[in-house]
Image (tube, rainbow over all chains, first blue to last red; front, side):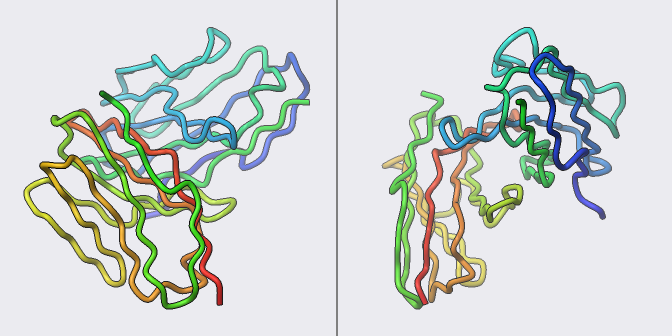
Length: 111
Length: 111
């Protein structure tokens, strides 16, 4: 199994631009999670899905953030418009039976 | 009640030493307690996990000790090696699949 796949691995953009992060979970997993990690705030859960349905988006910082999961094998996290304070590493994780497996992350830099 | 408190924030040991990282929780509904290991530039990786029906679980050099009455659990790394230098996160969850993470412990094992 290839594990959780995220793209791009690195993204540098300018303030105000739209950013889309992509995730392919492990086949057969029924939960998908989006996290953000920074030195200041640690690992934060943004949103998670169960069987493609958003369950808890209370961690999404602002309306600028949105996430979708159109099918069991794909999810996106979109930031529009992006701001410098959104700079962080964004992780996608998927799980079955509580065991969460993380992707390699997307390092986002907003200038 | 949803918090998981982790200590220490950082830890330095000599090669061969036994670093111990502690976590405490409040919510007695938690029934799954994993530990994750994260190397720089990588996503967190599941290391070992325990459920509250046992007091100890060992996998290789890694051991979880669980004290249900005290609502505490800890990670012990036997015969630590420089390659164990990483950030370690404890976590807890109920049956929702959502993990509540501790703040992380940065471990350095000196040669």
